[in-house]
Image (cartoon, rainbow, N blue to C red; front, side, top):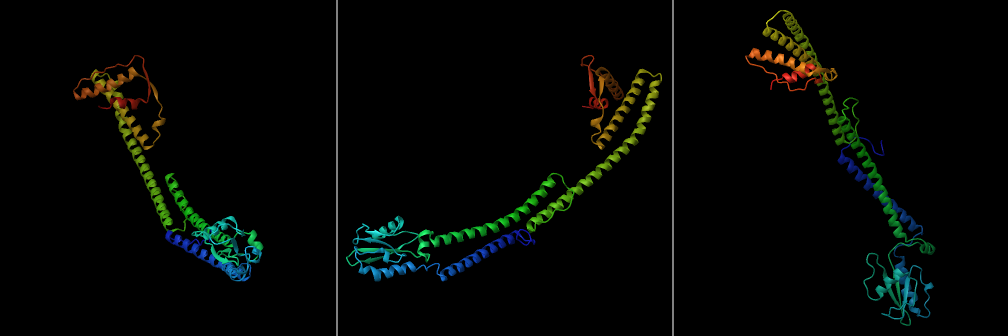
Length: 368
């Protein structure tokens, strides 16, 4: 049990239907209890029936007023439930005596002059002709008054208070169940949002997310959990593949380094001999090509282990010497292809470059 609701898994439709049924049932029960309380007040004599004022006015019109005149009229003899206005003659709007307030008197005058009365909260009127021809207009309405005249004078109309209080209770009941239902739905959607945020932030490990006890949201959470597991497995597979690739590249680099070392050593031996200029240039090109290949192997190892190349130190190179070395390599390539090579050096004298030598050489020597 959580928040007043049994936390069994339910669909959104069932949750809303349950909310409506509970709210409606409690409102009906509240109305019945309130009606029973109203009946107790009537039976105990605290309240009078709604017809009490009409009966009092009818008795006054039939038994008391015909014997009175305008001079002998005594409003104190009438029942306090009767509101009255005394007129000297029919159709004459002058009021000789009244116990009405301004609002009720306005309604009485409207009825006296043949108006339509007050719409929405109707006052009823009885005309009683006195012995001298004057007319007493009696006014009443069908509402439940207090039995005690002292309460009627000092408290608001009971019927209006009764309806207002019942309305407030209905509003509180509806608010209570609406608040509880929306809080449960909001808690489920918050958990779903949290799951989305964790996946978005790369949190793919951890315990499975708990349920929301709402069938549709639980299905969405299950799908999110499956997605998280698939993403985590995919990243693990990718990492394993990267490790295997790095191992293969490292092994291949090691295997290539041995023949390159042999070739480079033989090139060094040739350079120690007294060779013709063209042969010496070719041996130097072979030696330089071996150095370039070793640099490429280093790049392969760096690709297998990201971040290694970023930490490779840079050197200060003399631009003229660097171009001379590139020229030797270029002449060796062109000689083997039967072409002529010419180096155009337009760099200022004494220029020094800060770079990684083999990377810069590879960029310069790359075919167009």
